[in-house]
Length: 314
Image 1 (cartoon, helix red, strand yellow):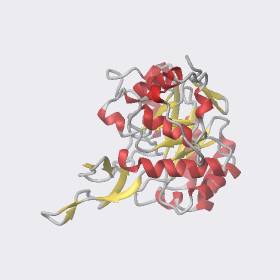
Image 2 (cartoon, rainbow, N blue to C red):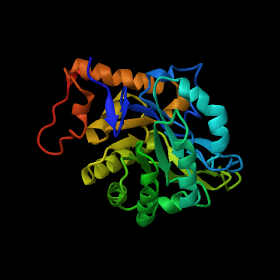
Image 3 (cartoon, one colour):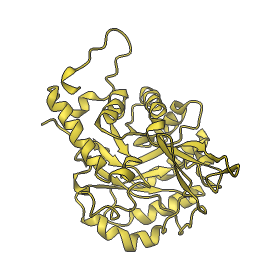
Image 4 (cartoon, rainbow, N blue to C red):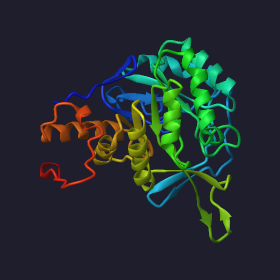
């Protein structure tokens, strides 16, 4: 068996497969459907200082090879989360990362400080790039100075892993990756959803109440791969790849492109055990090819010369 564990800052993950924020609820939603203890980690639904109702329906629709969502960061708020959801998360045997969303820098800081005071949270992922809220979110994520400032403000407030989730809706994601690294972030998640829309030709109206939303699923995988490759070449901090990962082959592509870990998102809506199956598939690939450490695959993309195909994996 290959070595699957990975250490980010002061936290060790049993494997490199996480479930993406917003696709696994608060961790307890899928308890009867999958063994969360077999995952490398669970990233919670985004948490804000106060509860958010989110956007009006319809706010999620299926598209060709993907999904559009305009949830609008609906959540129960950090105080209810601590009281109602955190006790379950303390009981599971895997890493718990809290995702934080906010409308102001001060709100980011307040939510992190509340969670930092509680047991059961191993790290933080900061959502600066949600494309379907009116305030904050994408406006932060498309401003390099703001991404750096948010990271700088949060860094002294925790010694736990601080991960910044970046938007692909920028010209050069490498610039934002550098800003996070320079401000003291431990890692970046690449990518959040792309901006997309769909139209009902009978009514000539948008299918989402907010007109546009975030596109996820297999349709965005090529974009996500390219962004991971770009970001991983620009910084020395780890890149966590996310975007259209549906199976082990997809995950392996991200590792080879430069991701140190990966997140499974939309696939969870089809199969809540997708992340577990992907982790098993990565192990099977390593066993079949005599690879002793999953980490040895990271950043091994060959961009020139002849590339051989490993027949045993086909």
